[in-house]
Image 1 (cartoon, rainbow, N blue to C red):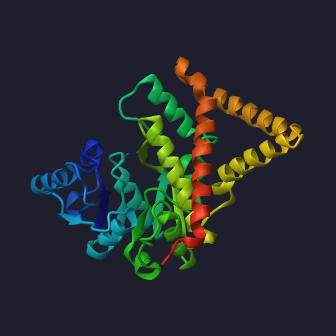
Image 2: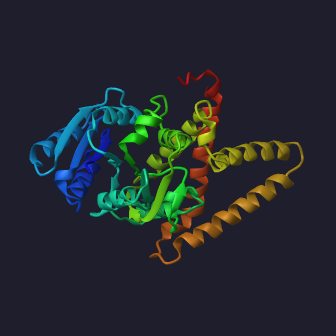
Image 3: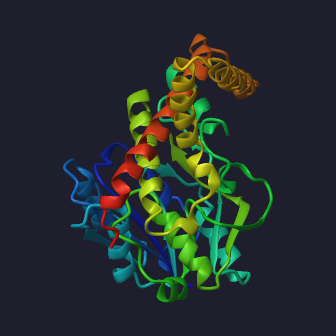
Length: 330
């Protein structure tokens, strides 16, 4: 069984070398692995790193380097889908890390009779500092991130979406290509179509891969804003692939606006109740996040970090909802 391991990257020279090293260390037979590297018109040394890997690594079945003129991630995956030759296509983000048995464990699940596999996806940081550790705690917390099964579930079962997925060839042949209009939710939309095509997404907690958390607050807030923005726009393409929890930050921002207006009109009790409950929850979740971890004074800022993450995501959703009527989804 030939596995095509695909990495799509844009300006990832800082992280790309790490994931390529992880691929080199895979225990799965290299002569049964095809490596597909897609550069999304990077402006840094990303493509040069890919080409160097292609030139030097000769024990794989093949290593191909392709261009993604569409630049967006779903367009990059479509380039990979048009060019890979394996029986399985396995998605690996450039901004991530995989253990040595990652490919082997995915193949084992698929060989057991499944058509799509994936596993748990913890967050990690590159270069530990007290501030980065605090950002990581905020991202890892259910309060700061999400309740998605692939982030923390310890039970094997079927889920709605996966982070790093491995797919048998026939899955995409039946479900089709990625929607290139989407910027951040292309995986949710694709996995929704895969489920509608009759396939199940098998989640195994034994399969582990890691995603690097953004290393600065500015980058993290930009990411959250973009996530909220694209979730809102996805309503026009595939409302069924979204869950209620995707819109909780937007509801929070709406609650701020409504209770502020009511306060101005002479009914401040609503704002007092909402803010009281929110900050109580933020403090409780902050305490839960630091239990068992080395303590830094920066962790005192966790409640504020939670607030900023929720606001950024919620404002992004509002921006997307405003654009939604004028956005051409096809």
